[in-house]
Length: 115
Length: 113
Image (cartoon, one colour):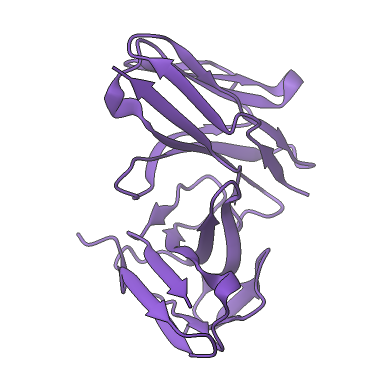
């Protein structure tokens, strides 16, 4: 079965601090895809990144970076030099070949960045 | 390009009332889904559809019905609203395949009193 665990319910940091959001997943499939979404206070869900199970290269996009490690079934998200605008709920999600029509989400991590 | 359009944005229902949440997408996506978002529980899948005429249950289907008569539309029906259905509901659509990201509607905040 698919499962995504985001153990950090809420994180508070001060602006310019670095912060890492953890995501641990479970799947029996060898082909799967991981996603991160951002939900700002306005409520919409914004797609951030997709990663497939065959690509373990880390990815960096501006202040955002993602670390995918199959050995620990983790897909962690780091924000460098956080800003107030990064305050949001962040969701990690998983879909795999066996259940490709289902996108399973973690419980989300609330990130509060204080000025 | 409108993407995924959900209506209404807000709704208050009395216990026992029925209503339909509308969802339409203009991206010709095969996959459409309904999720509910509750504090601390993330997004939980209610029902989903892999194409017109095909629907299936997700994680929390009880109390909800869906149909998919066209590729574009995927309405969610609450048969007899209960306070436990107070939530924020999101409709999503995806292209075919597990590698595709989901596009979400703006959400419907539903309160059942």
